Length: 530
Image (tube, rainbow, N blue to C red):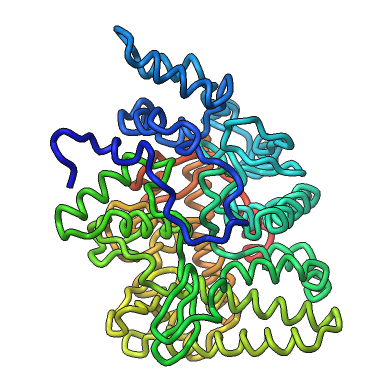
């Protein structure tokens, strides 16, 4: 609890960074580290409606000089925090060209083709004090407030780029991700210093597979070092784990089974959502005495999942203050890591490294077995996350349960049962629901998201449920098109019940939008042409 004489922000003005990450993963100062109390004051005073605005700003002079000026000027009469920030920082703008274009609206496919170059950025040299990380190649951003390269978004964007004849951009994206693995030892959530403590769903191996579709094993062999680097990041600490213990992103169940979870190597508020996280943690502390650091860790882990946020991660789905992401072994993450392990096995075999191939095939097989047993709820007939701290916790049905189908890791009987669950619980008028939970969070009902439509449809088709797969794709694409005709915009997320933008969460629905564009064109030229 905060005393009446101490503002919430004061607790963090000089707060240490709580982290268990290897030093190699901490290579760039964050805005909080650079600007200290100035940063806290700006975020807690809500100088900007979106907390991401300040952390994305570029300083006009050296951070130390700005900080010193702040300490002097704040004591003067009539000091304005907002004026100070505007005087000393270049604030991020918005690309108006991506917004509504209802006059002389072009066909949606032509509009998407015209959007690709508008979403391309280049940033080869980082400026002192800014949060944006340098990259060797041009890259594609999602759009709106998302002005940097994002990890899992990019796989779905790449599918559209390849479909639209922009393989060059897709290859540049892959090169950038390989660079991030070589430079930082993992792929961060996004290319910002304040996101260098977490990753996102590990889809690098799928990117390699996409760009080597004629011979995936050759692609895996060519990128074997990068694939092994990513696996080592997710499995860091596994060797020392006793049953029932966890370290960073890896955990060992009571019976010795090895699984993974989402995590973040910091346990402070997210810098881009500082005030929101402070308020959430204060609510949790007042309600249950839960340590703030634990709440912040789980909020950050939820951001690593890409599902930020959903009742999926909460003890009480209706209350974000009960978030417990690090207590959950997610079905989609563990399926993706089985896929990564299988990719390493194939790449090693092609490279002639038999020992590595055998070791990673054994890992992949063990994890696939766990998916079909530990993550399968026979009582409910669907895959689900596992609460590794409470084996009796029945986790809810979510669209993440379709990841084992997408990656070919379910049995036919399980896939058939999942198809029935989709028909009964997740299929909406406009595509696939993320969850059946109604919480006000953006990754819950009634919202649908492009990547989940893609993985669900491809997974169902893989197991012979082609009609249902096509139905999902048709419903979702038709709604995207109708909303485009009404607004001129392609959006981050959609309402699966009505033809309108998705809502909820911490910020307004953004337009652009990389993965929506990618999945739409991939459906149109793939599944919906079959």
